[in-house]
Length: 195
Image 1 (cartoon, helix red, strand yellow):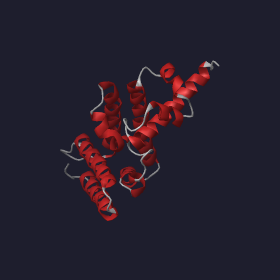
Image 2: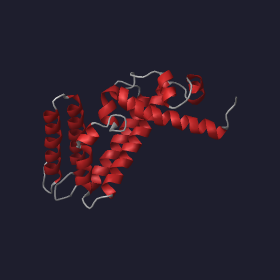
Image 3: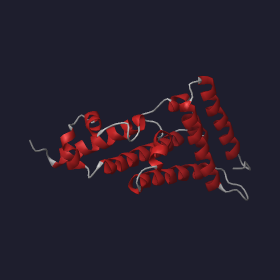
Image 4: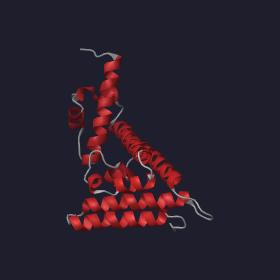
């Protein structure tokens, strides 16, 4: 039975959304097409009508994940009188650390993305630049300060801390990495703080 153009587009969006979550949860190579399509409530047969290849889907799902993460940061920042502190509190929390399927794609997929094609790496670069823009706008400026460089250091520190905290079995040590990173980000972000 043929589906309408609108239904085909809805199915495609469902696959991209499901893949965005499933890739963050299991990695790019941790799930096959059959399970990806099943996760979207569809059969594998329709995959190649919607996507050129698995790389095509990986790139689109990565873009969706990065855009979602940037929107989340913007939303968290907009809902607080201290936007940078809100982002620090959200990102370097146990809740976010445990949020595999909806958490940060840089943490979940960064090392996988580095080994992928340029088609897959481009959405990550775009997403990293969007995250840096959010941070850059929140960094206090002072004479001689370089907010964009601070933003790069802050993003690196935060992504690294969440990544390490996810690896650890020791909950106290895991929390220690999140706390240490939060303290250092606050120091770096303070007026006159060094990156």
